[in-house]
Length: 168
Image (cartoon, rainbow, N blue to C red; front, top):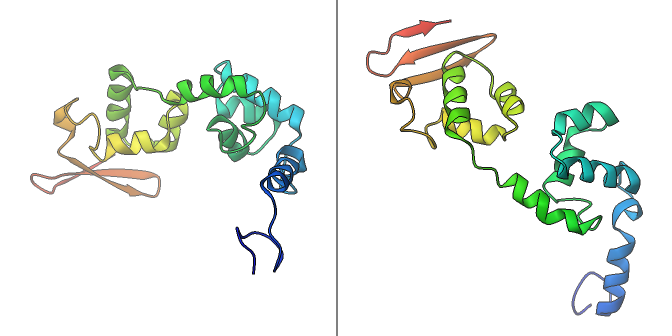
C-alpha cells in the first residue's frame, strides 16, 4: 500500500517527482487539451484587455467553455501569470445601478436571462439573482410583486397580490 497515495501499489512518489508529473500534464501536455498553448495565450491576452467571451468565441471558433475556463482561471492559469491578477479584478465586477435597473425592467418584459447576461457582460447567475429578488430588491420595488413563469416563447407574469395573469 502506498503512503501519500496516487502511486502504484507499494510505491510512493517523492514531492519532486509529483511536481515533475504535474508540470507534464499542464497545457498541451494534458491529453484533454483542446487548444494550443499559443491560442490559450492569445485568448488570455484578449480577455485581459477587456474583450468579451462571445467575441473571442466567434473569432477563434472555440467552445465558449474553453474561453470561460481561461477567464476564470480554472485552466491555463500557468500561462502569462502576470495577467491572472488582472483577470481576477475584472471578474469581480460590481454591477452598476443603471445596468441592474435595465435588467430588472427587461426581465419583467420577458427577455431571456442568457440574452441579458451576454449583453451586459455579467453572469447568468447575476441576472437570476435580480430575477429572484436576491439582489437589487429595493430597486424598482413595484416589480417585486411579479412572479415570472417561463413558457415556450411566451412569458407570463402573475401578480402575487391577486393571482391574475398578465400575458405578453
